[in-house]
Image (tube, rainbow, N blue to C red; front, side):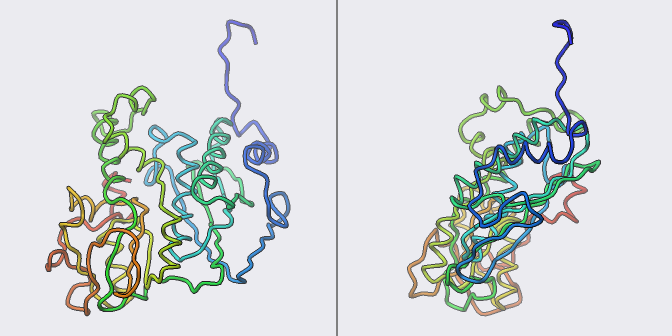
Length: 334
């Protein structure tokens, strides 16, 4: 290549699976597992003897847009949303298994940035948790699948089905910020046809502090995992990750427990409708018995099951109830 020729980035289609994998593993911290990445499967030490397992898939289009999310952002978010589900059970995250299905024109720099995001999320949110394996394959659509594993460390799991009449309902974390961030993206970073336009560093720097914070909560969520584990140790009777919107997730918890969740809109911030109907907050909805030492902000009470699983200010909630990929994808708000 002469000095006059533009540089061209190597794509994953030009490398072998082994070369791509080596580029990922070189960017991740060394494994502390008895058998980590590189064999047919990992071997993990789980002192409790029980493993909490969850998996989540992010697909380009309904779940993220490359115009808006950097590779680092995607790696961070893919880890964070799975770590939150493990913590919602009262378990300590110990390992991630990551599968990437990529078009062969994907730049190698994407894979490196993605790996950096995974490593950063584990280090910040769940120290001691690491990527211990996964899979690579080719696909026309960029798809990210992450499985997270956790240890209960001798505690009983905190399930959705444990809420009892008289329990207080609390939220740990923020409500509605991620939904506001999504609004910022659709309102300011789409063209006349509604297609995403590039979210540049300069454009992000031009946002005011409130919008910049909301955008960060959408693109790189930071679930309060340590607080969720403290809630489990403090006697939470039920808990779940608030990922699809408070109204929808509170309804799920109420249905699992056979109760009604009665929320007070005055506790839900300046925009209760967004707090109830927005998704991807990745905070935690927690029920505590009256004699417990609760964590978080009280937003309601568990009452005997009535006609509705969820009420807001004593009435059935009739607004947006959260994110459902099978209903909302066609609306383009994924």
